[in-house]
Image (cartoon, rainbow, N blue to C red; front, side):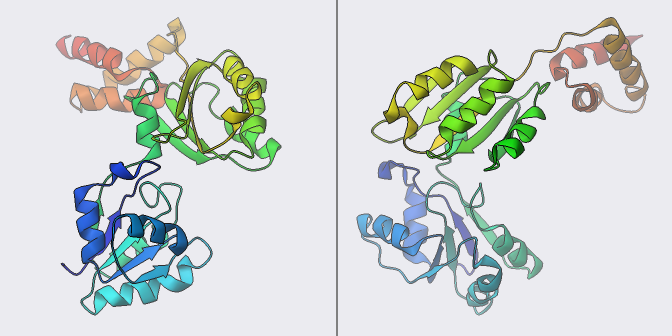
Length: 278
């Protein structure tokens, strides 16, 4: 096995989602750094893999990163796994990877399951552009303050949420955006998988009416707001585009104006082409 730090994605529920490359990597490395060694041992036992493990979680990552990476410096190989899905995505690992980069250690992705991507793929929401916010704040006021930032967001916004906060979180969603589109994905890849797409108010009622729908892990996808170009906004976008197309290709100019105005890139690209001809 090549000396490196391997970032290995593991199943988010269904063990059959483990990739052949992930199995090969977990079998071949000298050590596995796991968020919870007890949880990872159940996965390894199911795969009949015997491997040395060390715990690496949010409370010890800073102190333990150096000793884990020392194994690679000495010519060994280490795999980083989280409890489920792709490490670093709302899971520990960022400190370890950053230190590995600083030390010139090779970091190898072993891609696979991710609740974020799985949820988006079945959501029916616009997946061409999205924002991943991760877990919302625990306190209600901080949570509402965070949600208010997306009042005019045109992209799909993705959140993770835990079972003991889902009812309160949906209440905060409903207080701000009762009629906005929301997709709730629960227990993805597991026996009681649920995907519900409706207005925020309807999703809230659906969850509150059934205690079973309050269990498990959740991905929440808030649909973006459609913006209509006012005359003033249109003139601003057109003026900015007119300046940019003199220096940049239309595609690049459209991307920049889209970030500034939140209007769709394809519409702005057409505008850029028209301006380029004049």
